[in-house]
Amino acid sequence: MQLEVKINLILHATENERKILEVLEKFLDIEQKNFQIEHVSGHFNNPILLISSKLKKKNAQNFVKLFFSKMKEDDFQEIFDNVEDYVTSSGLNLRINKQKLILENLEISKEDTIKINISTPVYIKNETKMIYQELMKMGFN
Image (cartoon, rainbow, N blue to C red; front, top):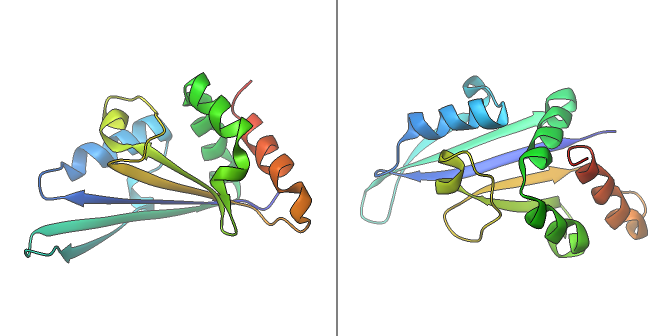
């Protein structure tokens, strides 16, 4: 199965870059060398880091398995049951809480998040739900 995972997050000057990259490597098995870091200035010239990574093929598959295996069962079930609410034309879009991740808790959130986009080609629109639910099952048995 062709699979791609994109991870994006924003770090503000008050947040520890080293700590978040270490937990992404340790807890979600994404090597620090796989991240691109862009330094930008905020509205008041405060430093901001835009951090991103793109995983493909086997790395993407391994991430998906690990990601869903570490997700709390109620978060998994919410996404699984309502997968249509999380799927756009660009894939399965999830947001996890950045601060909870530092504590090695993977929690779906709408605030202070790390954006995760999991995409695979879907050629028959009616199969979208089934395809993404099958992907989720890879890591949650």
